[in-house]
Amino acid sequence: MKLKIDIDPDIVAMMAAEVAAGERAVTAAMREAGTGLKTAWRTQIVQAGLGRRLANSIRLANFPRSGESLDAAALVWSKAPVIVGAHDTGPLIRSKNGFWLAIPLPAAGKGLRGGRITPGEWERRRGLRLRFVYRRNGPSLLVAEGRLNSRGLGVASRSKTGRGKVTAPIFLLVPQVKLPKRLDLARDAERAHDAVPGLIVANWVEGRAKWRRDSDL
Image 1 (tube, one colour):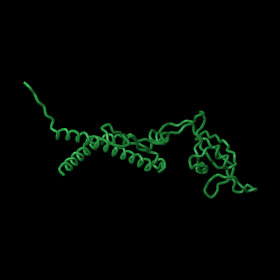
Image 2 (tube, helix red, strand yellow; image 1 turned 90 degrees about the vertical axis):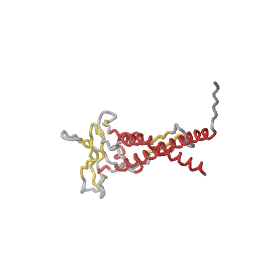
Image 3 (cartoon, helix red, strand yellow; image 1 turned 90 degrees about the horizontal axis):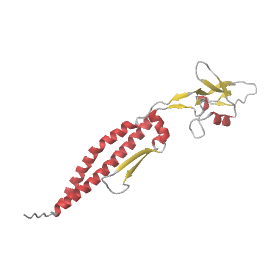
Image 4 (spheres, rainbow, N blue to C red; image 1 turned 180 degrees about the vertical axis):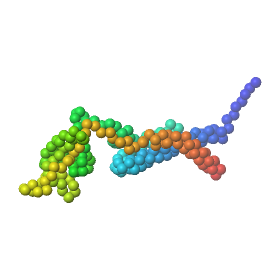
């Protein structure tokens, strides 16, 4: 008995087209999922009140960078992982030296870069010394002898008579602080992951239909 197998060129072309459609489908699906996840994380950060600048630290990279592949992948990450991660996990923060954490009060103002000001920076900029005030029932304080300006910031008093001079609380001192969890990045990541199979199928069906339309021309 002899068996003879002939490969129809049309079948070969169909298989090649199917593989190509699969590569396009997987690549398109991963790019859609990655873009969706990046958008979702940025939206979360903005809605949590953490600012557009931190939201824009979320970045996306697609692999391969050009062309299509059945092994396509998308990577979504943050260029500020420590800050984003802290708001995502809500960690317990303690002082590095084992003493106090200085929490700026409204009279402290902002740092030079717009962030949280430290006691050392505050003293250098204001030209005033901070004084430690221990409180048994409640957090201790760092206070300054000066005045509050029109914006409510503690500054040096210019009065020679002492008029308007106050003892202004500048920093609150606590041994530790629990950062509230303001983000849930895992939730959006799981949604993006679960959506991938459906995106692949949708793009594959669309690619197959396009191939058939082109074949009929």
